[in-house]
Length: 264
Image (tube, rainbow, N blue to C red; front, side, top):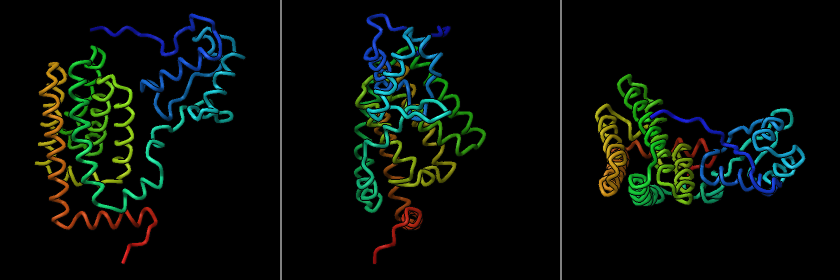
């Protein structure tokens, strides 16, 4: 399929007010099209693409900034604010980091969440969604074959993010992104533990292939089961690491990095 280019910032077709501009940008944020850290086009360019006057655009951007959705950096432009990280407050994140029980609950929670998400993605994915999933899966295979550990981890998170987008459920999308943010920060467990061996990496690739195949085939039940099986494997990998004593070492390093003294 040949992709048809289109503009994220469509021309305002109604009253061309600041409220209309605010609504359009809010929807792009809500639907996950614009992500934290994305830079908006310059004022002149954006006003042209939206077909609104620059004073109207300035009013809209100021309102979005007041709502905490955009950040204006003097001389550097306007960026999407880090709104995902605020889903979990800092005190809650610190509390989670101190207790192993939270890791077990996190995996259990994600097992159900990933299952629902994969099922919805299988039923709702558009052709563009499938193209994105295929690109990410190809990148994951290439990283696996080349032994590029970090690239494979990155493709892992991107695949789950893309499946979340393909589910076309706004609440699920942002909940998952918040979960992945904490995972990337090593709050629950160190992801390197799960990729600890060639055998483990092979199993994980096969699990991702199964989820991908089910979504591409539109088989919701198979997608749910594949996603849940993937999380079951991760749960076992974490328990194995804990039994080997690796968990204690990683937990200690994590606590030291966060600047909290170990409890007696």
